[in-house]
Image (cartoon, rainbow, N blue to C red; front, side, top):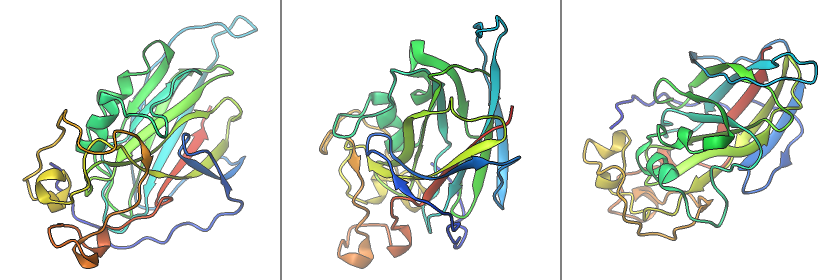
Length: 265
């Protein structure tokens, strides 16, 4: 169970060119340009590192450092600790229209990313895990160092919207090899329904603050579509679902979670 005080309101940053990505990649590219740093207000930070060995074309080990910033611009949806995998081509954390893995189900229903970040297996290069939930209006920086750079280096990232049954946001299989030192990419992230738990919106099925300690957490039984789809949003007690513990402040739209990836060195 998460114990978080909601933080009121945050205006989404006004950024330029928007180009939609595929549903499977869960992304809308906002910008990619050179910058010495990337920052947002009211942010906390954590770091994680992993390394492996390989030779570059010159015979030297080529490593990189990336700062991943996740900004929660929802009104009343805390985000679970972010799970990050840097990996090579060939791994996807999910595919639109296909069943979620058990690891993704645990993240989407209970906010636990510990198993999710281990599932890339042979494709894994490095992993990172947020230090805690990200309240509305706040962000977190997660730095992953000593990353073995390769031409097919990619990132997969996911976090749960904890005042829901099984909504999560993230990207999977997004390339990083085109980022030079000091460059960054920004994304508005899609919000997905993992399809593993019916969207009943009752307290016993929600791990966030509105669950008031009644949450049952992850359950292996699946009682929904059993396929990952774009989330249609919550209904709430304010819009005709009397049994719901959610209100209009818990509504959300895809794009309410922003990701900035900066190559530091």
